[in-house]
Length: 609
Image 1 (cartoon, rainbow, N blue to C red):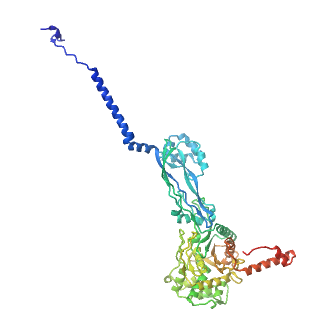
Image 2 (cartoon, rainbow, N blue to C red):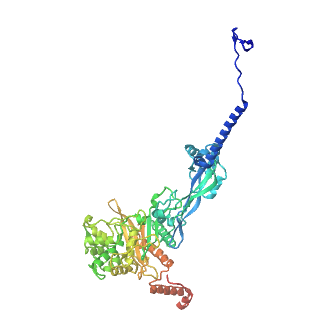
Image 3 (tube, one colour):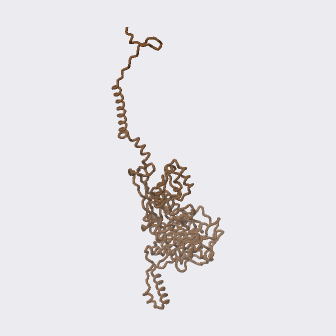
């Protein structure tokens, strides 16, 4: 037995020693190398998978951080007058916006931004802090500003402050056409007038593009175009800018001279129903719309209802002539200048005695008109007047157009029809009066008014051409010596018209306040234009007839229509009167300068107007 293979343990007993383990370095190195190799292969494989095979998820995450789809604004269609003159255009502007998340990290730059934009620091700080978790907000009151103003702010380099291109609506003619055009809101959508009526036509379709922004929100790359912006379609109106401005100017002059509170003018082209001009006062500037004086935004020519007064008489006469109960030579004894109307009286300005049918219109006899309407059945009279468009919309398509008030015979009292014959007991708009007179001038054919050039509708024959032409010739006497509208006469042209003066309803009765009308057609031989002038509440302090339609509104008709006829190159139909006036003027010049009429004629030049 070999004792060297045992050792002595701590307790004194002998113990056999443990066998030493064998260490294989090579094997361990191979195992470690294999593990590292497999890991490297796995990492490379994963990288290949992420970068080349299945990269959509992480690409989406990256795009979500830096890639954005931003809108491309579309310009609104231009509005022009009938001659191509711009009435409403869209110009490129800039809108300042903020990334509140970014700007909130730099509160020390807020005072600088407030000073540059003119905003109170407290207001700006509150707006940014309230949206600190958002990535977008417009700078208050700095949307659609001039590019130069936006550039001054951007040049400060304030973090989180940017601008974007938008469009702003401009109206070159301003308040002269504001009631027709209306305006758009901050989002460039039509709010009133033509802008509202044709909003879908004028509004473009915004485009979109993908861009990459850096962490400060700046665009560093335009990736691709998603869809192109489509601008809105242009619109050509029937309005003539020159006539519109003329009407606006003369209406303002009349209101200043008469002390009136408001007024309206409507001019229609007889053959097409196209609106050549529509002016109202008070007015407003649609380039700078505020919440103040909203009453001035109202287009009185299509929204305001008023009793038409004596402008109703030609329609009453036309109804009786069409029915055959009277003729142009029928006579009526209007003495003593009034007739009973229930517990009231229908009175004339004075006792006109015996009048023929034409004389009723010439002298504007309420009594004669009442005598005529008593010959007509109530239902027939109602249907005839309604065929002229009273009591229903004219069909112009203008937003907010009123239909008027024309009750059917079942609601009439014993005095209603008589009052209606000379313009009381029904309510119409100035547009409806102009439309009714255009129907007479168009040989009895009614056309719906239109604000679009070439937008004429289908005509309706509402009375015979013979009767319509007879009534127009009767209306010519109104502007000739002895008529009530001589101040509407235009040298070189025969004018058919009708003055009117209606008391304004107040508190269930009528006040000593008036509406002054003049409606007419020019030239009589072949009517081209129908026009109505309404002056609301002229000053009555001078008494007499100084507040009546023949005195107040007729001169406005003359000045505007005289200009319109020349602007539209309408040939005169009364050469004899023009030549006589020229001869009288030549004789006057000759007397003043001591020359013979022949010598004066040699130095006088001119053309018929």
